[in-house]
View (cartoon, each protein chain N blue to C red):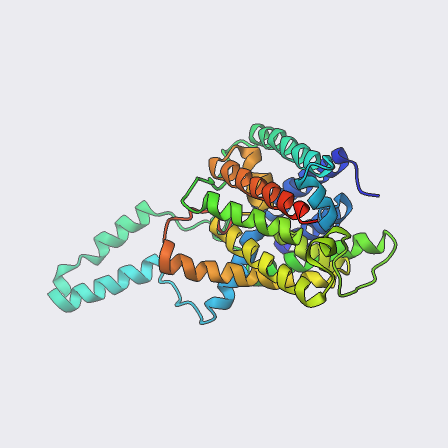
Length: 141
Length: 207
């Protein structure tokens, strides 16, 4: 139950924040990638730096070492990342964003969402058939 | 209008840390998509896993069948078991490191939709329409709804394929991985930002 409630609170907060930040705007994302406006990029940098400090503080306050998943480089890291980046630039969406856009009333984003599910499924087939490398523990944190 | 970068950055940090505190694991949204897809793929009930004891019992039965009762000294083995293995603690059994249920994954994704809706409602209201809020997208791809849908579908396939291939997206790799200096996350983030920049510059050149 606590798991469910926590998941809901974080999901709502994340969706709200992404919308307010402007990550759900195709034009804002385009301005980020073309360096026409650095606000989104700076937002991301502040978030990452803040988290870096935050995790350090957590490590120091928690007595036992935290067991967080390692994210090692594997043969799909760079290619997969690049394909995702291309999709992000075309659709203006990363996986969360397609959902936020739908909530905002941008119903055209339903095709992005459908595409994400299809692409995810197709990769799982391609992986079993052709790639088969070890994806590590990252898939399901 | 939109949040200043430091407010937005603080919000992303709060959400990612809140995810760890409240959900008990690091945020990774594409992982939730993967879990959902897997649950749709493996729709048949997974075979119930044998517990350690059931497995031992089955092995003993098989040994008996093969070599007769005398071959197993049950008592000695049980005594050793009791010594070596304390009863599984309920804390471990109910550990929050167990994978979340399909329903929970779906709930999180649904909450992203509602979160976006709340943001829009509190900022002038929601008028759902079969559009993408953008002035540049139609300039690049035209304003024909069918073309737009095909473009978004194709781009979405790239997102789904790519995030599963690199085992993470902007949340898992970009936020939670880079902030922990994970090599895979640094590489993936460099790759998706790099590709995003190149493709966006190309699209901008099509104007």
